[in-house]
Amino acid sequence: MPIRLKKLIGSFLLVVLVVVYALVASIVAVAQLSQSGPLAHFIFFLLSGLLWVLPAMGIIKWLILEPRPKGRGNS
Image (cartoon, rainbow, N blue to C red):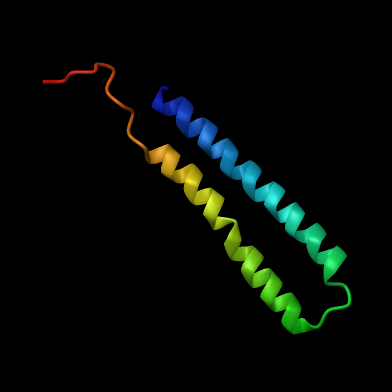
């Protein structure tokens, strides 16, 4: 896959990940934390604010992965 196409796809995936994750985290917070105290809000938003990094790391790792050589025997 050409590197420019890979970077375009990876950038698009990261933006989609952040937008969808923020929407889902907000929906869960509104639905589940409406009667909770400030400590529960703090813990939820701390954890959900850090959790998106895990799938983002997978996308970034895929982005920097070097393409394999086309031939089998390189010797």
